[in-house]
Length: 60
Image (tube, rainbow, N blue to C red; front, side, top):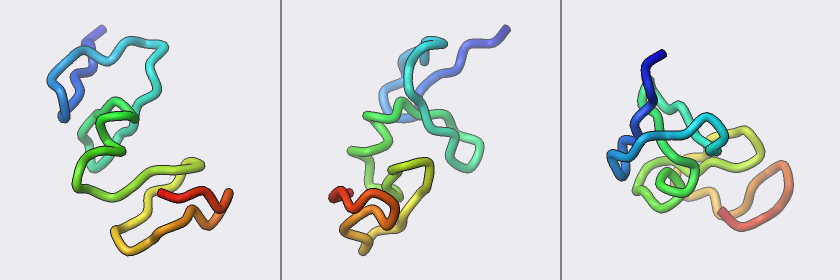
């Protein structure tokens, strides 16, 4: 099986790591959250301008 590599840090994504598949790119969830791209929370992706998650209300 091919290992997934994070687009943000270029490190291998382990099987038990939380990760995001965005437009065919694999990211550690933590790397994706600090990127300039859309934010991820509660299984959804939100564009910039969304301050709080519509599902849980937490800041994103």
